[in-house]
Length: 355
Image 1 (cartoon, rainbow, N blue to C red):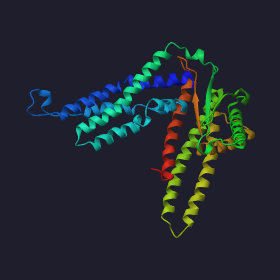
Image 2: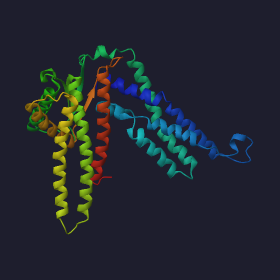
Image 3: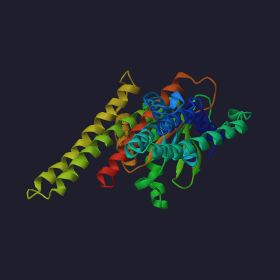
Image 4: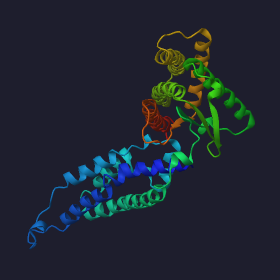
């Protein structure tokens, strides 16, 4: 963990949880539900004689929780966030839990209050912890502490996990060669020297390699990864349909064979198209030579294999007050990657029958 990652994660919580006053929004909703539970037409206090609508308070809370988008964080930063709070309580999954809570306690207002208080306590701890962290980190000049990112560069984070994990020296050598070729081919496409890309660190666990490279090179890899993940998303839809057909145990097995063959053709055709799309986006003059085209075609296939096996690519930047336009473009590209990764993971569970 780097100080910059901790500070960025804490600032994310400050901007999306503390500033919108989500704990207070919980209090507002809980207060109205509690008063409604005590409503009595004979009560001497007018506000306790009849139930009040909760639509406004509920909508405000749900909209605030829905606006929390953890995919804006890098993989390491999301792991950090999970140490502070169960991330299923955030964003869309958090909204689902709130709606489910009301469905389960439709006729039990105090049950709804108790369940909301449990979720609120998680947000209270998150806000308290992050407030304390920011007090400590505020005087620290992170760019001065962490000067591993050169001007005009960003960090490509490559994580080897799931079926793309590294368990032996032979696997390490194979993946190292593949990624050397990927960076070299994208370097040819972007007219950047592959020697400018530097390995900064290797972390254990789910092995993470960090490579410093020019914005343009990392953007090209991100653009290709976006397109590949979109392909993988559609591929899992196809695999899901194939699995459902196989479960029917049809007498005509040719349908199953045709589906498997269609999946292979689907992958091959789309990977070729992705390579051409990336070339057209990066090299608008279309002056790439045969070597670059061939190298990129191979690298696109390698990148597909890596991402399809569960490997991930991410990106982190210099923490400076004014981000250049290139950095903002990278942020958008890799934010979309993280959204696609989350959906692909859901489809994997569906395909494996683990819902």
